Length: 149
Image 1 (spheres, one colour):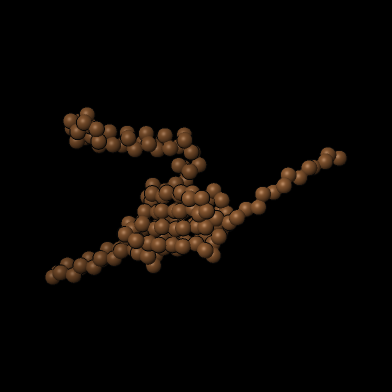
Image 2: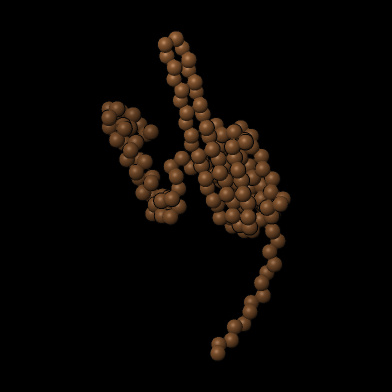
C-alpha cells in the first residue's frame, strides 16, 4: 500500500484494494488476453529460464506435499498438476466438528523448445518445485523450394 492509502478510512482502503486488483486484471487482460482470461486466480508463481542447453522451471507450491504433485513432459509441453487436501477433526465435550478442504492446481506450459523428457530432473524443496529440462538438439531444416503448377 502507498502512503495515501494508509491515511484513508478502512472502507476506502478496501475499495482501493479492489480497484488495484481490477486494474491489475485489466492490464493483464490487454497484455495477454488468452492467458489472463483462462489463468486461475490461485495459479502459483512460475519462472521459466533458458539456460542454453536446458530450461529451468521453478514453481512456488507452498503447503503442497511432494506426493500430491504430478508432472508430465512431452516435446515442448510441461504439465503440472497439484492437489492440496486438509482435514481437521475436533472432539470436545458436547461438541464435534469435522472440516475438510480441497484445492487444486493444473497448468500446461508451452516451452520455447523441445526437451528430452527422459533426462528431466525434478526437485521439491521448501515449497518450490524445480524442474530441469535438457533441450533436444534440433537439426536445422534445409529450405525446400516449392514449385507452382
